[in-house]
Image (tube, rainbow, N blue to C red; front, side, top):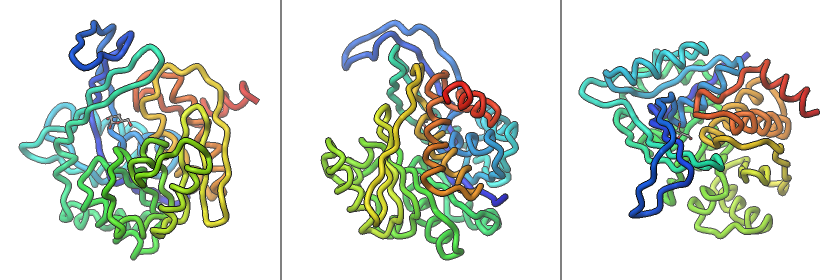
Length: 307
Ligand code: RIB
């Protein structure tokens, strides 16, 4: 089996369950508070590791208890953490998450050590890029580092996957030309391209803008409406699974994690998308980020029950 490298963020999630989201100027009483390992990069790596892939991660935490806990959690699913630097004087990244009764969330991230990743940290871990077949990136670390890693990875002939979250409207062409798969959700593709995406036709037009930048595959996740794969040959839609949603946190991250795990197992992209839908549906039925990610046994059980 090949190796996967995730370069990205680690956060401690401060999760508050609420009946309804507070509106601007409103105070609401929360139901429960929990600390849960998260961060988009770490969630993706954790999903791949828990599903049985060989994974290394490059990132940064502070020299604090949260950093120690986040590393330990990744190591429990056998993720190589030698590339995660403990930065003196920095705080580990934190995310403040409200989850309401419908399972929807709102998230504010304080990047901390994630924002201090440098080219030097990447250069010191170059052997992890060399070892990898697939390199996975997101946008919770500095954009110049994401661009730098994608460039090195492509020069070394690696397959590059970008989960463009949190979305921004200024992704450099220099980055996009080195990406094999980009996986925005419908809000993110709107921000990335500036297009409105209310219909399949509009989604397709927006995705084609990204293909023109040199990206080979655009996978748009559409929540309860499934997903759309767009390539130079046109588009194909995939249905979502019908589950009782408890918490959507890490649904997108686990989709990317499971997609990558299936691709490293040499599955075709369509099969990989179907597998990713199953894993992220399970994640939506449980609370939290890394706490909601299933192993292969749970995935197989779920498939039996739902076939
Ligand atoms: O995608 C979910 C993640 O976003 C959370 O775990 C939080 O840490 C933020 O990065």
